[in-house]
Length: 181
Image (tube, rainbow, N blue to C red; front, side):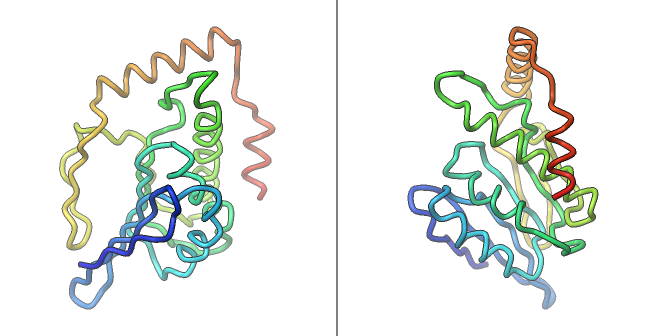
């Protein structure tokens, strides 16, 4: 097994690779911050195939490079088999602290919808919790350590309360704009 930590300044971005029966299996984890997003995006686009892409959480130093990457993928059918990124609606929203994370999570989910419709990504797991059974992908056995289902449900409740309190609705024009790109 090889682990390739990418130059992500103050963020995280890495590729884990192992070969089984002559076939490389790749897991991509996070995408680094905005200031290294272009280099990380180029590296990820240069990969032949991604078996699993994981976004650990929505902070800018983990998601920015992935937003750049997903926006840059054109026609690579079957490029990514699996994506693990909890849905945007469970990002804890605090108007004063993480507005950007909330918006980034929404944009990411719109990219994933678009890429799934185009057949570029296969399965998108948006319910990643400790209750998942360990998953085997090629030579990798993966066990989720966090969040628990209780934490996820609490974040969903807070999200719904915020949406109701603010009278917000999804913007269908934004979804159509993302799907046209």
